[in-house]
Amino acid sequence: MPQLQRLAVTAPQICDRQIALTREQQHYLNRVLRLQAGDRFIAMDGRGHWWLAVLEARETGLFASIAEEIAVDRELPVEVTLMAALPKGNGFDEVVRQATELGVASIVPVTSDRTLLKPSEQKVERWRRIAAEAAEQSERQFVPTILEPISFDVAVKDCNQKYRFICVARGENRHLWDCLADLAPPQSPLIRGEQDGGELSIVIAIGPEGGWTEGEVKRAIEFDFEAVSLGSRILRAVTAPIVALSLVGAALEKC
Ligand code: SAH
Image (cartoon, rainbow, N blue to C red; front, side, top):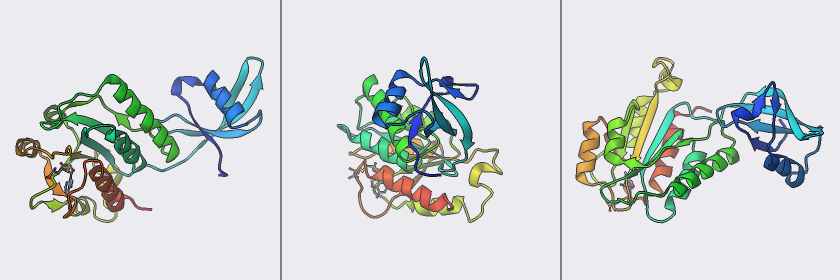
């Protein structure tokens, strides 16, 4: 496939293999990207579908018709949730962007004993926009879900992922890499959930700048989290998610 421009659309815009483009999308395709009737682009719905679309000029404006669905496979073979305590300032913007590039399926921002500030609704909207942009940029089929911030204790109790890890900066814990290697030996049927009814899901919890309190780690362990290490150095709260997700990709993704 030659390098075609990509456009994020929503499912309700598509009907009978036609895409009803919004005014902004028409402007973007025509005025910004300089595409004209007959030109092709890729439409993505953020839910796993990509289509090759062709621009058409009609009296009412520009439309696009779907020529064919494109098969893409850019997703991790496991569903990974990042449960991350909110760092101070705008640090979470980069966490959302980079975690999306690394294939995260959903992000649960959590408040913890050492980060009590609940972010504003605007911040959550901003993170969702960042996730959509990053998914588009990294050509992902899915836009990760950014959940509403909740307290760590509630997140831990409500957690339904099968494999649960809490990253703890100090102490004698197994390395996340070793845990992931156990989870998916080469060619394991666990990959893609073939044996599991599609339930191969992982959650990784990362603490705030001040770290988790002992009580938080204890409570997470009560809910079947395993305390893990990301190595001998103390990483910043914004670096640790990137390291953890890179390890998941390296351990479980087969090229
Ligand atoms: N201020 C704390 C460290 C916090 S680092 C201290 O001095 O102990 C922020 C978060 O990143 C931690 O809560 C943990 O989840 C994660 N993290 C950082 N380095 C890590 C490491 N080497 N192993 C596991 N988790 C780590």
